[in-house]
Image (cartoon, rainbow, N blue to C red; front, side, top):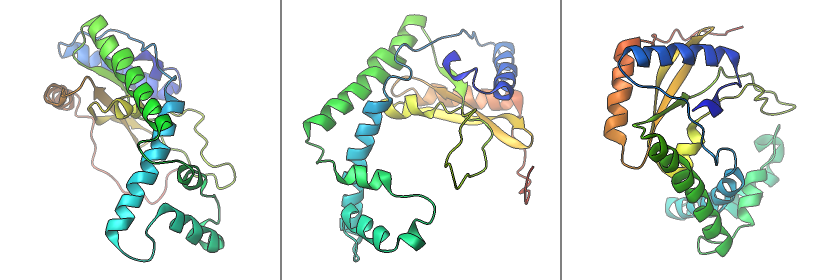
Length: 222
């Protein structure tokens, strides 16, 4: 999936060697693009807010204790903000608390939109069009240091998990190699209930490349 390339030159170079390995192993590899790529983010975030509130409230109610709702947590954080929120606020908590329940029309429309764009017009569409067994993409780029002033700084961010996650379809990631001792993964994802074939492909890839290395647990890295 070429839409995940072009963001980090070193990741691209590593993934190109993985593509060669797949071809040498007998796979036919073609370049694809998904027409709805980058268009489902707003609907996905709307779904996240509704489901986050509903599921967290359910968990807290069953857990017991003094804090039974998301609203309780928001109040606690605000009352203890110098200790609980010394660097960042609780924006997602507040936005989620403003949402209704899972019968709300806005939620149901956002959920439908997310599924249509990632399933019917997304993964299923491109796999049917090109008769694919699986889709591959880089799983990640090297991580960056936490910036307590600006927050995340994903200048060269690469992350291919959203498409499969929003669709509800399986995605498996295995080691692809390393960049300056930092691990990089390759993702294999596909249509619903394709776990058996994805596991077969990922296992075969691991056996061909032997990309995994024993963690060194370095105290720091510059």
